[in-house]
Length: 281
Ligand code: ADP
View: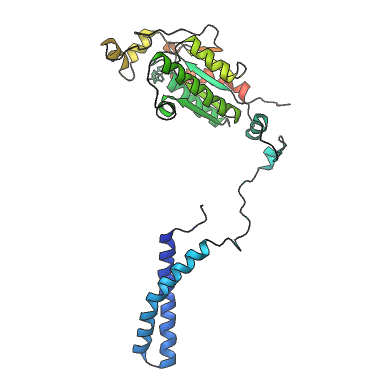
């Protein structure tokens, strides 16, 4: 709990308080006895007993809530309350959350070869949306493969399971009102169909980051193509495993002829009207 003092703080407070207290006791003892030596020895003994007493006194009071007043945890800005009708006796709906955040949630699903530009675009897009007042979250290999999916490899089965879990996580974010940007190769149509079915076709925005294999290989951001060509990586998408281009994506980004900024801007302008409608009514 943030309002609790640490043990160290209680101890240091004990020392500062004792210094003042002992000075006071010593001066009073001196005034009463007229003997400075007696006064110093009274103060000297007291300093040890009182420091220990103070520490325990503080720790006991830490456990007593009485007299602390009411803890206020949530303050709803009036402006946002205008559009929602919070009913605290039921679970908040997605609509309640969207109204609170003043946005509509979507899952933006970036698919494309390794090195096509998904991560780069996702990061620039996240920043742009955030600056436009849209609350969003990127899901990518970094936060998914190293966490919830750290028990999955790259076999066909594991890849399918990888996408299924990502889609389930994205759906949770979606239902929390968050605009979720997913950046995964997701090479097979069947995988993306699984994701679409879990998320719901209405909210699944498929974006094809369309970059020719030769360009991705030339970029070879992580040196993976070189390894795949040498046979050091098995079933590498585009080299030794298939990539099936989307048949009907919501948007296609041609990154070979664009700067990362231009690609991200194109996607930003495409998505903004559906996540931040100008007029909700
Ligand atoms: P992926 O996540 O698809 O594997 P990355 O985003 O990690 O790809 O790498 C893409 C590389 O391509 C980056 O070095 C990026 O600077 C470069 N690049 C060049 N043009 C673009 C573009 N228009 N959009 C995105 N990335 C681009």
